[in-house]
Image 1: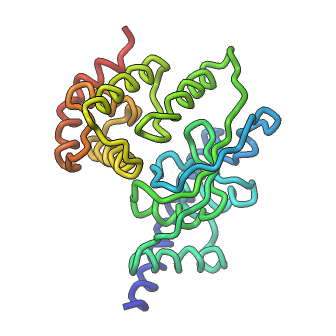
Image 2: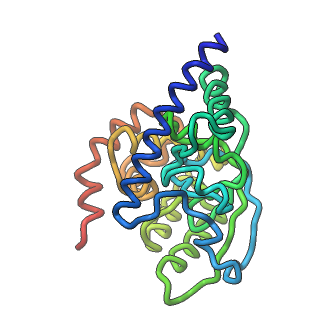
Length: 265
């Protein structure tokens, strides 16, 4: 069986490499960056206020957008597809991870820096690549949060500080909403839920968040997952014991309302 996995892994790498090269060439031809974002190029280190270790948890792979060091960036296209030839040591390691994923799964947590809701990989770039190639939605990660200085003239950092305030006691960790007002709305809904005996269990709440990531993917919804969750909770409450299929059906039915909420006034 292992040999069959290894043969298939080679075929999968060839497909992933074609995808990576195609994406790279398409982006470069448009004058855009063809490789991964690099954290050091995104962040001005002298504007980072603090580094905070976060609990290990499942994170959406859609928010894993880059890598920590520039040396790793050029091994992957912008969406983490490989760029090295099949004969390289890199390719051999990628194929070994691919075979392991098909056989027993990739369970070890990656290490990431979180900056402004996005994640940059410190350790585990090839694992991310393999899982993104197979369409996985989440992966377990050990997280270090980087907190930027508050800039009153920068709407993004102002929104991020509203998130940090929410994140202190909010049920859903790492949740991005599109406005400060929505964090206040979600906080009020959660306080009502807790007052009625609702659970604060961190693992369960993270699982609910991950269910919404999957539901939005299945329903083809492109709005922020957090915004979708907020509108859902307004209608149905916190779905503590609700299965994914029911959440997906409700989210799909909510699409006209979600589009209306997202539209300019």
